[in-house]
Length: 66
Image (cartoon, rainbow, N blue to C red; front, side, top):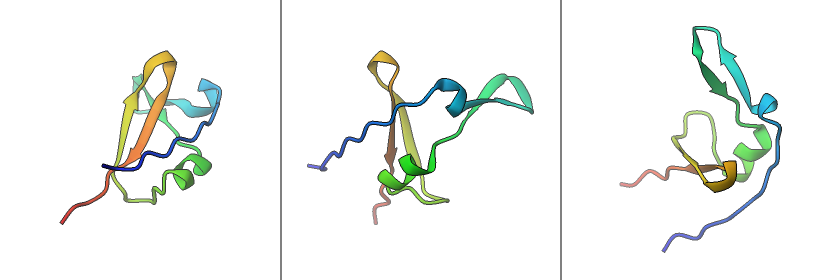
């Protein structure tokens, strides 16, 4: 069974989401560096992003197998 580590980070949605200049119907999610560090996510890593209850965003690094 995989060990789950939980960290809490509170941010204003204006800090996390910005308009996509190429598509006005979409937004870009910017993950703060401290969140990436806590999740051990580096540039090029694959991440899973899920929407939790009560407006939470769950970010998990996808571990490569094999």
